[in-house]
Image (cartoon, rainbow, N blue to C red; front, side, top):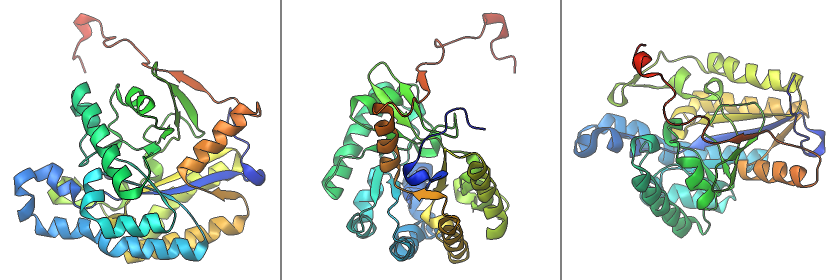
Length: 303
Ligand SMILES: [Zn+2]
């Protein structure tokens, strides 16, 4: 069972969002800095995302009539304008994903806020809209991130893993709706083998990866009121064999008649609406969870 099942539109059992994080070649730059130019093979693997996968993905969405969410570093918005233009033209959402895939929890508070503001400005300039949602690169959210998001007018975040239903982060600077994710529906573990990025997972067949993703979906169908979020990457899941399997998945999900496919922005808006009408009371987490250091001095570092 789910403790707080959300009443989804039209009696849908599961709200579904395929989110695509278009990291592209920002990853090779953040990993290798000035040496990125000599990582041509990794660069080609990553640029496959905006160059080859995005047109394929958009074509699928047009055929199924889906509008979905994309997250991307602002650096990618500047460097891959053709892909961004095509995504925006089809009415999809573009969310914030750092400037060049830097980890927010490795920055000072001032640096994190400064780069967030610069990235918001770049996204707004290229897409005509401020981003409403955030996904922290590699889920590396800092203790300051939720407060900065609230301060900058974001509506939702989708980087945390604390539930199967949306919940609210009360940050002290305002509220943010959390639309939680899970490593079980992330395409990184089953597919990413990239020595230049220090990831060397054993590559799984699409059918095996989908088994894991769909186990999550079927569990939610059996306990209505939850949220299924695919956290995928164009250069990973947009490869031909994997994307063909995704198309079959979409067809299957739609044929169940049990799903509501939406952007994360639409899902956050729906939850806010049913909360306002009194139909639903989301869980509210007050941040921070603990004071800075909870470890007694003599237990420090005894792992
Ligand atoms: Zn990413």
